[in-house]
Length: 226
Image (spheres, rainbow, N blue to C red):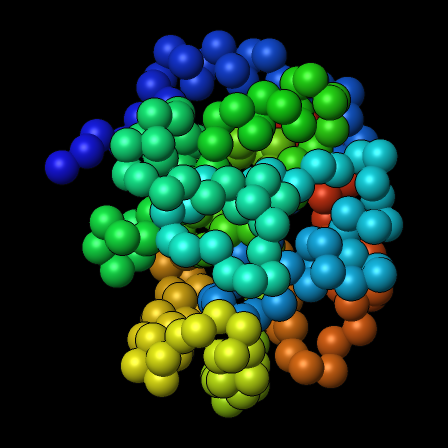
């Protein structure tokens, strides 16, 4: 059993004090079920956040212990750690565990320091709903927490379409759908309350959604509540 090195209270206070206060945009955590379109909005569409505002945002590359897929680049899509020891040798702002210890993900403190402090940019993160909740607790009004809601039938179609790419089984797809239904119910019941909920169906115009997100992410220093 390993101890995950998440940031401690004093470290967190010191880190938050070092964050720039004069950026035009808040950090953005894009959350939603697997297959909801997070990557499309962040970096895989010509109108995505990173293409529209490359000088203002940097992508936070999460750490992961799962196998790298054929279409993924280590250090760009995820920082892939082949062993649990390597994963646990880093400090994280938040972590999540999937299917036991075989699938761990986390937001690296080093990535936040790179983007926020050294590059003087806002972060954009691709997270699950629990990761979004945790980052909102840490960053508070510095962060816009977005949740993508997709009709379950459309979500199932997307996941089945990319099965060859991901190598997932029907059972794994079924598990993802069950998780998606639970997550969307938590949002509908207001048990989890993201800042911005978007119906991101197959017919959504990416450029319009990104424009909406950026308008909600824009802020002046007076909005910060630290």
